[in-house]
Length: 80
Image (cartoon, rainbow, N blue to C red; front, top):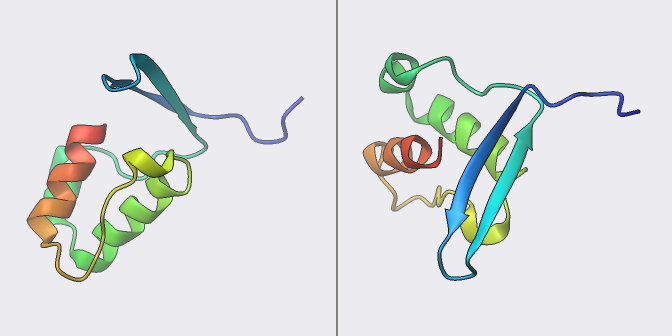
């Protein structure tokens, strides 16, 4: 058996491929919307990076320097 069990799973629909994508996470990267709203950029990038390590490339959150905190936060919210 796995040494680390997933504690949460994200379910997203890929309309282009007509498939459902299930992403299992070993840890919850934040507790709630209010938690996300109070995060600074470094914390948001940490959440995005933790999600991106598990997500397929096409679903990863863009964290480029030109992306504002608001856009990164919104991308996280849409995903989860």
